[in-house]
Image (cartoon, rainbow, N blue to C red; front, side, top):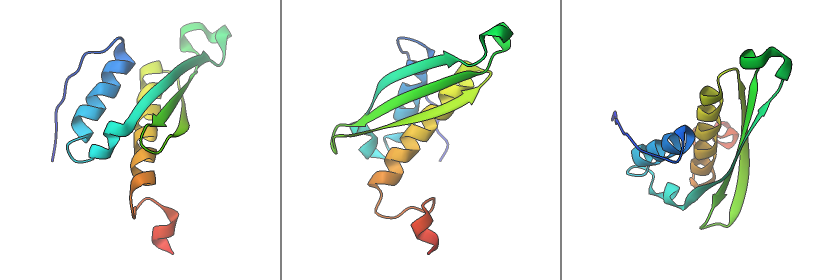
Length: 109
């Protein structure tokens, strides 16, 4: 099923995160327990100015399990790096709470 969601946030990454959750929570209600706790951006090569690669690190927390994890992505486009780190974080949460997952190595044993 395709979904189109729109959301406001305190910045573009917050809005993107809220859109993901609006689209995913109907089929994955467990994501209501996941919160973004930290967002960091680092410029990897400041000498290249606006063409520099950026590293985005996002920390997540599962309020239900009281666990946390981080994801990292690197791209020359900070929004693209943020998008990838967000997707990885939510995907990790879904894999961790699932009883079985087609993306997990154990599935192929």
